[in-house]
Length: 478
Ligand SMILES: Cc1cc2nc3c(=O)[nH]c(=O)nc-3n(C[C@H](O)[C@H](O)[C@H](O)COP(=O)(O)OP(=O)(O)OC[C@H]3O[C@@H](n4cnc5c(N)ncnc54)[C@H](O)[C@@H]3O)c2cc1C
Image (cartoon, rainbow, N blue to C red; front, side):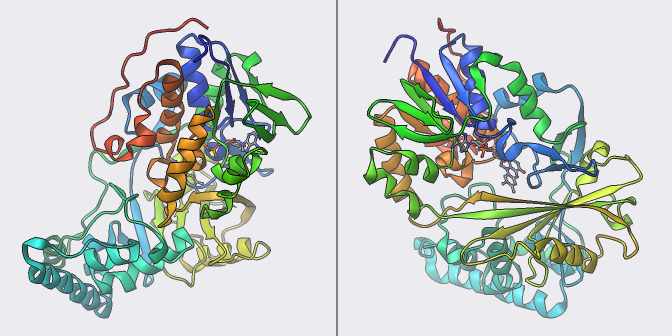
C-alpha cells in the first residue's frame, strides 16, 4: 500500500461523508470526495418546497449502535428536538399500538380468533417437533408462518410486508432481520387481551432526536461544511471506472486517479460503470431493489387531534397506497413555514416490477387515502403537494443476495475498490444512517491501518444492543 494512498470517495451521503470525515480527522489529506448532485446528504438530505415546507426523503429517525456516531452528531448540531418513539398501525378503521402482535386484542373478533388460531398452531408445531425444533425457515414468508402462524400472517404481516418491500415475502431471506422484527409471545398477547391493555413499544428508552432546524439533512450539511472545501466536489457525476488504470471518468470529461476507491453509489451503478470488467458488469442486473415515492402534504391548519403525539403509522391494508405515514410537523415545529398554525404529513409508497405505481396519480391517491384514514380534516386547506421518486429506495434482502454480493466484494477489493453504504453494500440490515456513516468511517480505517470493517462484515455484531466504541487509531501523516 502506498504510504499516503490517494483515496477517492464517490457520493456525499452519510457513508461518503463519514469516510471523508474520518480521513480528515486522522490527518490524512490525500483524498477527494465527488458527488453527482448539487448538495450533500444523499438519501438523508432534506429539501424545502416552493411553499416553504421542509421534507426529508422519507421518514428518517436517528437510531444509533455506535458511541462514535452519537459523539459526531453531538458535535455537529446544537439544537435538537427530543421525541418519544410513538408508532401505530392503522387498520380496520382504527389505530392499534405497534407492535401489532402484542395488541391484537384491539382487532375485530374474527381477526383476533384467526391470530390466536395461528399462535396455537405455532405452539403445537413446536411441541410436536420436540428437542430437534421445527425446520429452519427457508424464506421470510416461511419465517412469518413458523413464528406467528397463518392468522397474523394473513391479517397483518403478509399484506404489510408486501406493501413495504414491494415483493412477496417469499422472495426475501431471513438473515437480515436481527433486531428489526419483534417476535410473538402467546402469553403476553393473552394477558393483554384479558386485561384489555395496550402494550406499547415506546418505553422510557425509546426516544429519538431530530434537528430543530433544517430537517434530517441539516446533520449532513453540517458535516459536509466541516470538510476542507478544496477536497469536496459537488456536481461531479462519475460515468466510468477504469479499474486496471485505477482511474475514474466524470460526465464533464475530467478524470481522477486513485489507490483506493470508496464508492457509495448503488452497487449496480458501480458495476455498470466498470468499463473493463464485463464479468462484474454482468452481475448488476441481478441485484433486486425497490423504489420509493415520498409524498408530502402541507396543510394550512394544525394536525388533527388524533395525531397530536404520534410519530409515524403503518398501513397494511391494500386499499390505501402508502405503507407508512410520518406526522412530520410533530418532528420539529420548523418543518412548516408557520409553526403552530400549519402541519405536514409525509407518506411513503414502495414500487417494484411486482408492484407498479402510477406516477401521475400517486399524489392524489395519497391525499384521498390520508383523508379516508382521518389524518386530514375534511375542510383543511392543502397548500403544498410535494412528490419525489427515489429510484433506489430499499436494498431488498432477496434470497440470492449474499451469493452475489460476497464474491463481488472480494473481486472489487482486490481492485482497490470498496463499495459501501446503503446501496453500495446492499445490506439492508446495516443501511440506516448510523450504519452508513460507520461503514464510511471503517472503510477509511481499513485503508489507513488494515482494521476489520465490522459493520460491513459482521452486521450481527454491530446490531447487538450495546453500543460499540471505535478502537482508537493513531493519527497519520497526510
Ligand atoms: C424511505 C427511506 C427511509 C429511511 N429511513 C431511515 C431512518 O428512519 N433512519 C435512518 O437512520 N436511515 C433511514 N434511511 C436510510 C438513510 O437514508 C441511509 O442510511 C443513508 O442515506 C445512506 O447513505 P449512503 O451515503 O450510503 O447513500 P446515499 O445517501 O444514497 O448517498 C449516495 C450518494 O452517492 C451519490 N451518487 C450516486 N451516483 C453517483 C455518481 N455516478 N457519481 C457521483 N455521485 C453519485 C448520490 O447522489 C448520493 O448523494 C431511510 C432511507 C429511505 C430511502
